[in-house]
Length: 634
Image 1 (cartoon, rainbow, N blue to C red):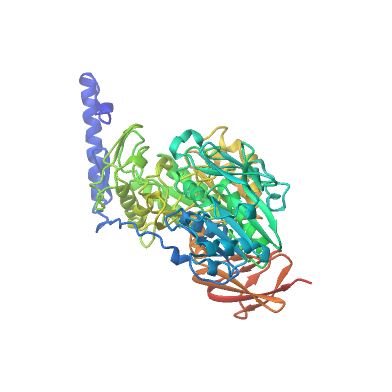
Image 2: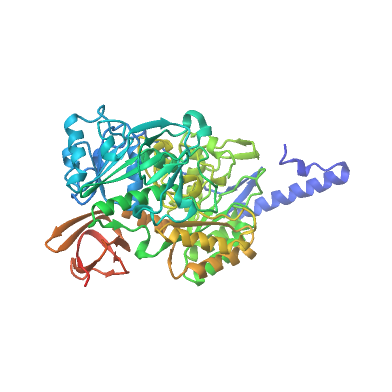
């Protein structure tokens, strides 16, 4: 066997040396046992009297999402008129939540038309809407409403949206925004102006699109010059038609099924989904000027920066202490994804053992988050079987033979055992976050994380997900059911060339781009060395500290989970606006973006702590209901 070949020494001298080595190992094992710590069992380190976890992890069946769960709320919200419940509406719901746009879903066109902005999804045609609904929608913009149609295929509304004919195709790849138009003016970054949405080379997996022929001044065109998004002023209102399905786009990115649509893998700016959501937000604000949206960064900061470390190499645990001591010295908590490596294999020697517990406990004592980075760090984790759900330490012994061969690895086993060991040696501590080795992302990961007690994932890159915002994962990374797991994709990592220490200016520039709309920057630094990597971290913190919110992944995720449950409705009261905010989960530092020209003149309950950056109000600590009164600023 490969692991034993190092002990096969030729000749009599080799035999004596081998015997001495074996005697030394046996003696070390004897004294470790006498201390009640651990012992070597072949290529495995076994902690004495440590067995678990108890019980079985059961993956429940998928529970299909219900559009009715997004029903209700006030008329100030965007109304999503759902014409096909079997569509990718769940992606649109998750995306609007991430962008902080208040919305409601209904299948009743009369309910939808009580709102000032209506998004008809996923299609408009006489096949999905009755004649009276189509006629009412046709009259809506002239009365001052904003009508946003997706895949307008008929229903006699071509003239309303300003085109003659809809031409389908699977051969288109990009949407190019016309930044001379007010709604698209902010997208002046080259990576924002062009939105990739499909890869025609993927054949039947390529996304379909509709080109609107005859549109005179479209908001966006496909790369072939045909209209991708029409824009038309109708009376006092507006009519827009999308030739791509934004819900499908969102699920494609969120589910890491983007078929090489992304223009890069990591360490670069890929805001395709964010631009689409920001564009929708602009349409909503234009059509309903009293709209209050929910900020993406705690306390109204410009961007969120999460420093994370992967510990998956022998010396990394010891080096990690130096990183943690620096972070503690500047009051900057970080997240440490730690591989519980107790099996010697092709990847590396054992380092999760008696000796490894010392730096582990030190890192935690310094206030850092401890998270799981699997047991085996298998390059084939994405292909591993789900497992039985009753895997236990020390019987669970995954083995990476080489990059193409891993044995005894299961999705549930890696989650169950790594979490159990970390929590066992950190009594009273709960491990909530997970990152797989090599970012190998099984389709069953969301429901497996739920079954094993995790809450948060950092298992893909922002570029692969096509977004620089967190998002909620779906069951099986498919389209029909939500999971309770939130994903926080990696923005910057340290393995690409040039060395990380030489890439600080590029990282700061990327942060500048993300700060334009409250993006998330997750930084992944392996602690295999200190040197230029630690210098990079120090330089990044110094450059961003004044405008970025820093914290652990868990801390930000707790904010994000609570934020995801917040509802916001706006009610006019004379010359004032009453903003009704409901937070069923305590949320700290909730930022609300105010309508243009308005300021805060009152808050209920009295004495609620708040701050007021320009254009925003921040509720510093909210649980339950609050009312913020706005008036035109003088």
